[in-house]
Image (cartoon, rainbow, N blue to C red; front, side, top):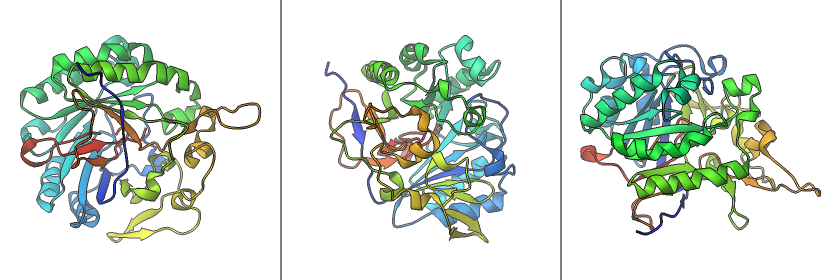
Length: 372
């Protein structure tokens, strides 16, 4: 068997990726949640607003990819309507990023061609997962995931790696294979939301920890027939840094009308855009877009500004590693070493999401990216 090799998913023009947080409420209280109600709002978008904003961000000249997020998006009573409305508008792919509780009988309200279901789990058993995500969560999430697979839905699973669960990551590929999950997203924990508020920088991995574990587990999963997407994180010496804010079109939308281009900025009022009277309005002053233009030896300027603790330097002050854009992903695919010419990029977030369902319930040709 050919040894699976990691391929970097380059940013490509002609795509528009919409990360739509339709509410910030959640039934869980995950310790690493990045949602910040003070910055993102506490309300739930109405059915009418959902339709208006889906129209606002749809560009018929582009490949439009949509991810419904929360909070927990299945808590919204009109989520199924939003999925079908987006499909009718012409969105090429729709994904629901869920904690696995699947409220409002969402599996009965949708059919497999409507959307891909992406589940979040942070351990291979309750002993590892539940201290992070909540008591009883492992049992509910895995039962609903297997029910979704049984009904024919395309599924993916997101595992957010930190020092709490890194040593258990290697146990996940065999479980995913047994459950019938097609895609595995390995995310790196970011200092946003709760971790940032508590100053939990010690949860983040060193370059040595990440590189010694994650690529090997990704290769293990690919050998089992599972497609794996994971952050690039550290650039090689000869790799050129690219910021998605410069070369890609991504919108991270929150219920209070803030619209960001970079997920690392979401704890701060740096949003490039806002929605006002159902129009997309560009903000003035110091916003994320202006920071994207800065070129620094460390790579990502937002990481340097907001998460400087994960940078290290030599005695001469030169960075030992350059940090890639958080939306830049690597992929390991079973049995395929060259990307298809019609593959397209989808940035996704720690949520973050997947190659998903396109026409007739098939995976659209996407390399799903997810900011951490």
